[in-house]
Amino acid sequence: MRIKYTISVIFIVALVIIEKENNIISKVSDKLTPRLTPLTPRLTLVTPLTPLPSTNDSERLQSSTGSLLDSTAGQRHVLLLAGTRTGSSFVGEFFNQLGPEVFYLFEPLWHVERMLTVESGGTNASVAAPAYRDVLRQLLLCNFSLLEDFMEPRPQEHVTAALFRRESSRALCEEPVCTLPARREFERYRCRVRRCGPLNLTLAGQSCLQRRHRVIKTVRVRQLETLRPLAEDPRLHMRFIQLVRDPRAVLASRMVAFSSRYRSWQRWAAGEELPLDQDEVRKLRANCDNIRMSAELGLQQPAWLRGRYMLVRYEDIARFPMRKAAEMYAFTGIPFTAQAEQWILKNTQASQEASGVYSTQKNSSQQVEKWRRSVSFRLVQLVQEECSATMRLFGYRPAENQQMLSDTSLSLIEDRTFL
Ligand SMILES: *[C@@H]1O[C@H](CO)[C@@H](O)[C@H](O)[C@H]1NC(C)=O
Ligand SMILES: *[C@@H]1O[C@H](CO)[C@@H](O)[C@H](O)[C@H]1NC(C)=O
Ligand SMILES: *[C@@H]1O[C@H](CO)[C@@H](O)[C@H](O)[C@H]1NC(C)=O
Ligand SMILES: *[C@@H]1O[C@H](CO)[C@@H](O)[C@H](O)[C@H]1NC(C)=O
Ligand SMILES: *[C@@H]1O[C@H](CO)[C@@H](O)[C@H](O)[C@H]1NC(C)=O
Image (cartoon, rainbow, N blue to C red; front, side, top):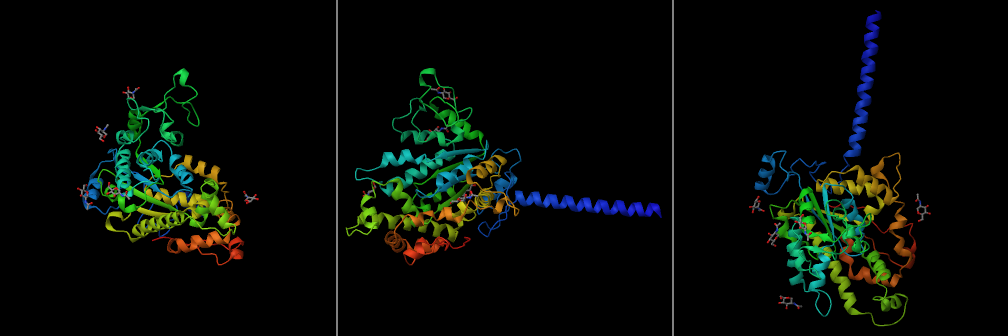
């Protein structure tokens, strides 16, 4: 009798323990496996060694026969495509901060654009687009030699002190790429956290090859279509993330950042009767059209893009940074790291709520819609006319009058999941 009783107690205790463990395990895997929205169909959390479903049969064959020791297994090449003032530097950090597996470059095309800028200002797209594409391809393959052709001054023996925003790339500021500067150079070549000598691009290329994943952020690609050859290059395992933001907020931000260029707009926005620079209006519209056309292409999922394209709104990242970061990592197949999680927590003031870290909301949507209190309805109306199709596609609701614009308790961001 006693033995029977003891056995049942042990049995129950064991059940309880198993149940608890299950709970813990499922909690942990909840944490590790971000719940995916329909944005990323068919993809579950992808570890670096799991081949992704591929649209290209021969590529799929290759990766499924590749051994676990194959250094390119699970390798990812990511382009973060955005416009200016869309928060792309911030989102780029989500990848820059991932750790030693990732080689991240910040706006390398700056050099290409500068060299190709024509006298009247701007670039000729039919010249710039192929140049951007070729430089990106070479960089994703860890070869800086084509970029060197566009650098001014030209690197000497592959060494330069002039790479644009080198300090924004951790890989270029860490061992072994960061070498101690000679004493007389000490003040000149500084990374954020340490002093480094001039940049040896051969060394940078070698370090790039040592890292499994490569990520480049750029605001200079106008049309996703122009990057099709990269998606089709079997040496690259491309993922494209297009980052978009409410064009009204972008314009408000540009008017602060480049205030001298927008002086007449400021006066016009304040109600003065003066002719608006039609060139700038055309640029505004062209910019919105380019962003929309790229997104429409991506969302249509032509065969060459299938499983390779993700659309992200800046507003969603600002409100749900951890959740959106997890979605982006899951989509690219690059594992989330504790280091990145720490960085995001620290830099978004996301608080840990009972519902779990992935549902945390950056301070508030108020932060995201702050621009609404600093722009006039007249300006907003102009953007809403020039960019109406773009705004509709991304779920940015038009403001009908000044009152609706300034009442931030009424959100102008519709909930959307794309795809
Ligand atoms: C698929 O990849 C192979 C190399 O792995 C390449 O030769 C072929 O052109 C690709 N096909 C398509 C349709 O992209
Ligand atoms: C852009 O470059 C192409 C090729 O060099 C040329 O044919 C075209 O006329 C140029 N367009 C403009 C607007 O300069
Ligand atoms: C880099 O690419 C250039 C051609 O653009 C080629 O000549 C060179 O050998 C490549 N370097 C490496 C290390 O592959
Ligand atoms: C740059 O790094 C490469 C690879 O380590 C090395 O062979 C070369 O000598 C370095 N160049 C200079 C000028 O130090
Ligand atoms: C959120 O932002 C508001 C101002 O926009 C500030 O007063 C408040 O303290 C912030 N809350 C948190 C939790 O950071």
